[in-house]
Length: 537
View 1 (cartoon, rainbow, N blue to C red):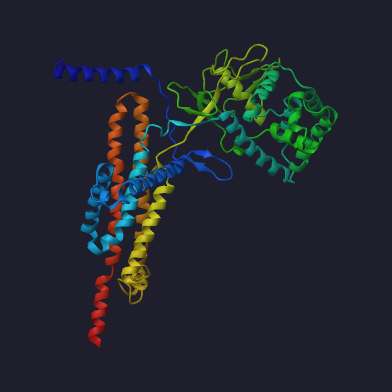
View 2 (cartoon, rainbow, N blue to C red):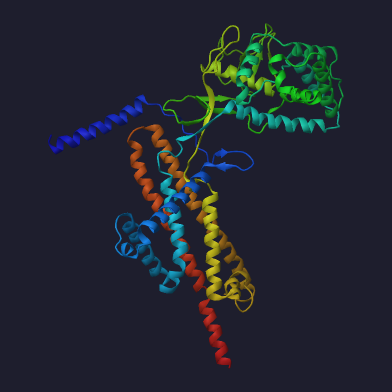
């Protein structure tokens, strides 16, 4: 085939791939997060940027040890570089010549180890962030658990505040508690992944209006003996606990949740039931919205090619209870229809609690077509609402790394200044007074303040320049892959390879320039001072 025809064919194939990706492939909507995502969230949180940093450090160490044991340990081999050693030595030699050109022979040799380390660390870090496993390979977390856990924390704080409030509570709150516990009390619905099958059974029973003996008894207890008006927050909490505790002493929880509380004391079990049923207002909630991708949850996954957005907020999409025991989701953000109609006579919007929010998640999945709830309340949890937490991410997109390197650069610059000029002269420019000051007198004091502001501004500019460029590049790659899958993102990858190199080089060069300025700052005045002392003698 002639070369010109071959080029046209390759161009048509590339265009076809771009059109195919744009028309037929629906990649997941990018979740752009400024904060690094946690990978291990326990006593010590490990984020994906931390994991990436550890991998980069290990890779750099492996390269160094490999070069030493295979090349540099043998002097004869080291004198005749080849392959990767030749490339690395050429790069370092080129960089060393630049450092000497800027700082001179003496200072260049002193600054080179730190400046070159900054350059190589950032170069490896920036380029490591371009590998295809970044933001693609990771663990998925069932947001049904994550959301419920966050809501549990908020309700727990609200419960503690109410329990320690000795003031009389509004009649509206007392009425809400009486109505909720007498009509919509449910045994605690578990939300931990290990208990999700059990939770689905409980929710299925609720949807078919099949109440347990304890649920019937607790509701009756609040109807027969409602909470008194004018009670304090502490009295309300203790009153609710006492009623539930009395019922549990008589009948216990329903059989399907009994084993989870077998080891707990009765009072603790009652407090747990209050926690799951206490109505909570949106003002008491930190993160009420549940959003993520619909996917198989658990384990390590690759971002699916096709994914649907899922969003649920129980304060905007409350659970509506009908007089016939049925439940549904309603939201005023959608047009009213047979499936989405406003509450009518005999219907009530359930107050938001841990239990009602959990029921709402299931109803929302049914409405979104993720699961199918049968007439008898049965459904299979074939898919979960999950969000992917990538294992690896560009390190400089975490503000901590640029800030840490900027601070170390600042520390070394000051150390070099002290070594060259002495402690008194180096910090004289910041104090602005005394014989070591750059400018003496009241004006010198103001100049010293400006020098301090200038040093702090350098740290800030160092940090945000690197962070902004690398984070922006990550967003560009995200959106390119999302808008036009196949090939189109390749152009931006080439751009980001260049940007990663330039940002590492600029950071290192600015550190070098500031170091040169620090060791030369005040030398003129210092020389004049020495000349004056000599003339006096």
